Image (cartoon, rainbow, N blue to C red; front, side, top):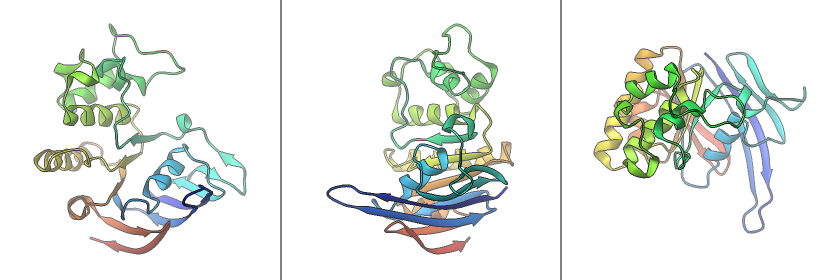
Length: 226
């Protein structure tokens, strides 16, 4: 699968204006966008996911056009079939873990039922070992369990592309290592799944990077294959 991104967006913040101008294309199964805080990593992910509209450019996933300014194509986030794991996980505090995972499968704004959870949600909870916690709420489980819930929610709709925003930043070193191993094992089960991980941690790059993009000040400054 090929991820083809060429986007530009000007952010006119009062204290720090910022210009994002990122272009890359990759067939790698695991792409790592590596750079310091404030380099434009999260902005890039948000634009790919449909949470930020670029000023110009395009986003294509396996030939499918998600955004093209010249052709006036801008698919809503829900129609892009892109999984997104936020840095803070963004779980709904009033929903159980099972409901959170099933939320990605639901249409409209209705909360999933507590009594009847879709099989796809159950499957991914089992994959990440959180099925025994199905009835608990996010504030009743650990950070690692919240992170696995966020991963299960992102994967339940079977997206071809998974975006991960600093997925290990809030976790201790042993748990980071275990979850990196979980992501590698996941691609063994889903060989068609492409991942784009953003990080400022060189250990993530060494563990996960097949195609590494170095970003500084809103631009790709180097690329390498591992």
